[in-house]
Image (cartoon, rainbow, N blue to C red; front, side, top):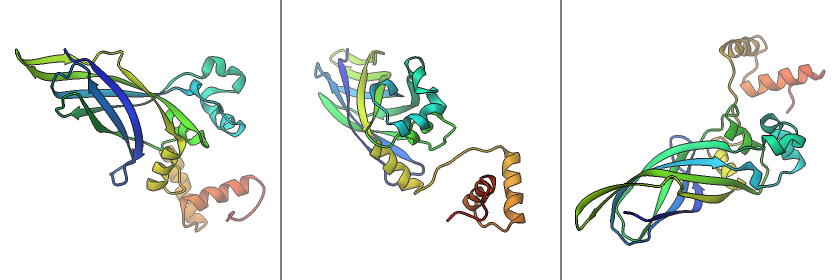
Length: 216
């Protein structure tokens, strides 16, 4: 039977991908030196918000997720980031692999809200592993399960997330709107000859605040 250990040793943005993707560098070791033919690996990544401190500005932005800081003793619970699968090829002893993790900047998603609220420091992550191990020994092929208790902690720099989003969405963020709202905004843009969505939203905000014109 395989005796596996997992460590996350790095994470970097993938420069050229269809959508924003982080590459988590994993080190997988098989302690008994039994040759591993392959691992059909599954990984759940979870944010552990209790494992860091927050500035006053960050607390204000996180109120939408956790409420007022006075309630954080009850509401500061783990956030599901994502779940991914990856096929690890054959190795003996230890190997290092890149685990691609597709990401979203959708601010309707809890993880997106959390990342957007952070200014600097680290994002405390917990990687939970499962899956199926395939091997070949003296008695032929064998199959084993990755134990559910296998996990790895990692402190991801906030700057890595910011770099990822700046690469794919420079100086931009995304929100989801109802179709009727989109239609109303389209009519507003046309009626006022406003060239972009950003300018239309700025016009509405400046009008609502009692000023006039589009803020540069």
